[in-house]
Image (cartoon, rainbow, N blue to C red; front, side, top):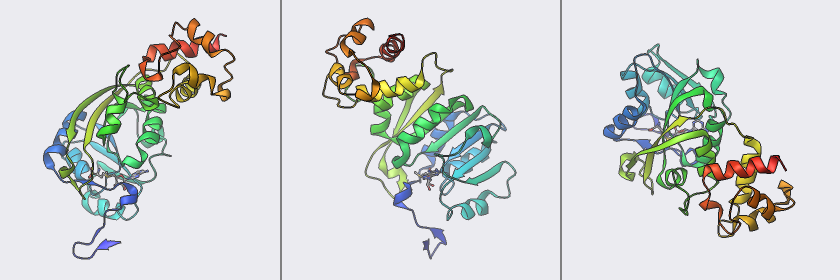
Length: 267
Ligand code: SAM
């Protein structure tokens, strides 16, 4: 569907299209990424090109991944004559970042909220592709990503992100910076990838996911009710890992979870 007056496609709510309209915020996001000349950058969801144009103006080589086929011709019209711009019409959830550009690359995205969690998991799995990532997400999601032990915002997403990245919240962005105006505040976060894990990531995900399943319950209770994990004696496992069975999952640090995983695998 197109806006007849300007020939520009209407924003699609289903694809999380809230476009950045505040140049100061655009500049601050790109500042957060730190662009050197001819820096290779992947942008997820370029939309109408607000971040893309700033990246290109600063000398970056941009590969943009856009799922909306109505926006791709508009991006080509705007930037197609610049050799340092390339747009790939694809779903960022299925893209293999190794194949997109010579890695490691920087990644920037004003992420559609509906795919925040799956995209973060995918970026975590392929983190060796990135030197640094600057993402804008719903503030509530960034609060969860950066919540410390003991904070009730801490959850499965927090530990998945913590295991893969150092996360640093940069700033909040009010709803008025976007068109159409969303209902919620956003936040910008910088992620720096960690090296390969020295623990079993598959078991880490399964145990943390079960541990956080019912956040009000104790960790022991959640592990007792996760038969899929095959933990015969959850209380004994926690005691071997030096964890008080009465704590809730949100009280554990990343190191605590890693200890539980290691003890589980050496049972
Ligand atoms: N970067 C632009 C800006 O800041 O104005 C647009 C941001 S808008 C919040 C999100 C963009 O991601 C939209 O252009 C949308 O079409 C695109 N998008 C949504 N889901 C996507 C997916 N799975 N893969 C790639 N792009 C996606």
